[in-house]
Image (cartoon, rainbow, N blue to C red; front, side):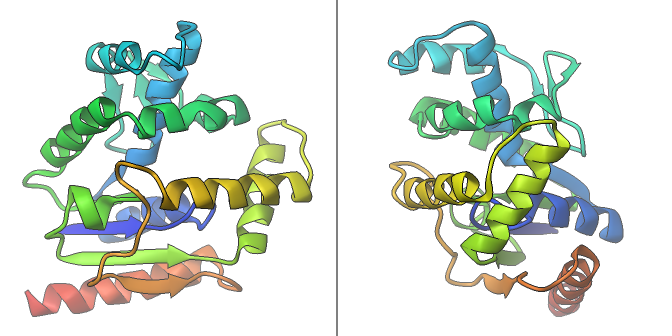
Length: 218
């Protein structure tokens, strides 16, 4: 069974998907981290972002492992490194690159084949797994998402302000909705869940009930 969780940046997709996968005993697939890992590899090699073909070539040769709660880049644990502001600022070059996206989408489908998987991103229920048995679209207000993102940054030792993070999220929302490939949009058959005012445990409990209901109908 495939459970997709899509939604805007800061909506809690990663935390919820990890916890839900543990709750269900499913594999967890963090697709956003894959694009971040490609961007990190590009940063480390000093690639010119105006040469998308070089990034696509790099993506074909790096080894990314994201089926689980850690993200490995050529065997190195970069779970925290890919969440930094510097990587966030350039991830769009990987996510908007059709050749990079084509390769990673194929990897995602292969990784999920024959497995029970909770996968999260922005196009999982629309592009990558359009026939998934259970689709969730996770949302939260921009202010709530900004507070969560600021807390994450502070935990990583980065300094910022709520206003700066909110402005970045609003800009990210606009970019994600208008991307030429894999834009953020809700699948027609996805269930929308707003996480405002809900704890992680409450969200996971709600989603686990939805998955159980869907499984009973299969």
